[in-house]
Length: 389
Image (tube, rainbow, N blue to C red; front, side, top):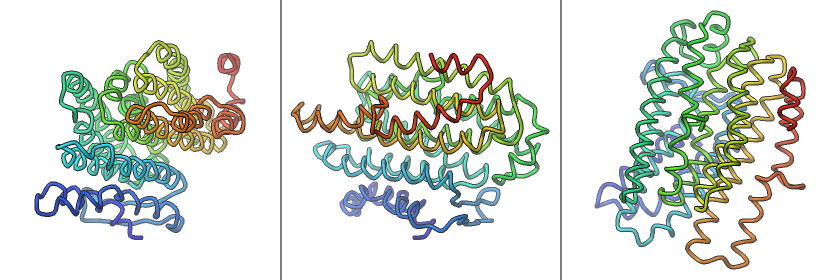
């Protein structure tokens, strides 16, 4: 499976969907657009790279262990959402518009997983971010337009912070390639640079005070869009931190403490506010803020204790996989329940991912949380006590 097919097929299908003469064929193929990405994640050889010296600043795409994991659950979730969208939007006269934005967002999300240089990563991240605006405002009612405005403001803010941080990092490192970019710059870059990257990616990851778009966008977006927004797209912010922060290279106690504090606050804030919600999709949005808080504090722990990073990275990856699939299943299940009623089969289907998110025994949740807890065990006081509480 060619990497070019993974990246370009969604864009090609988006073009077919927008052309009246080819729309029917494009709509038939669109639900399967993420399948090449899933196949690539499962079958591509280790350390696969594709260099495109003519693209941007000289683009490099490839697959390392971290990228493979993110590509795996991202493509799987987009595939499930695409297949679900075919029936969910069957009676929507504007379904071709939604599908075009859906495919463009998919292409950007896959590109983020595969990019191995700063310019390609930023370009894919921006394509994903701004294409998703069309998913948020698809219903075109008052609530959707309001959510869209907030989403767009936060998206522009995040992109501005992000591009500033990436320019400073690339200038200090004298390269735009990964992982050399963080390895050569780790000891030389001022803290402001990494602060910008933390905040820029933090908008997507739902960090407190930057999270406002999440509980507004999820309830108004069509259910397939909500599933990928929460299950896959917010993980792009996490992946950005993993790619561009000097994790395992050098200690950054100030930023690490900030991320630990913000992550811990998000973990509790999301639960407390979420329990007060009556709209299921809003509750799930706050749950995502809470769950992303655990991943944020784990990244902060890696900045505080570089020697613990070999334990923290697989724990973060497992937690991202667990949350992405469980939360995507819950959003799709809520859509099924709203459409077909709360029969016993639907409720049983919702119970399984809900138990996983809660960390019930014999679920992916308890495995992910146990591994994360083990990886965080070496933190200095008072963090173990706070996390235990």
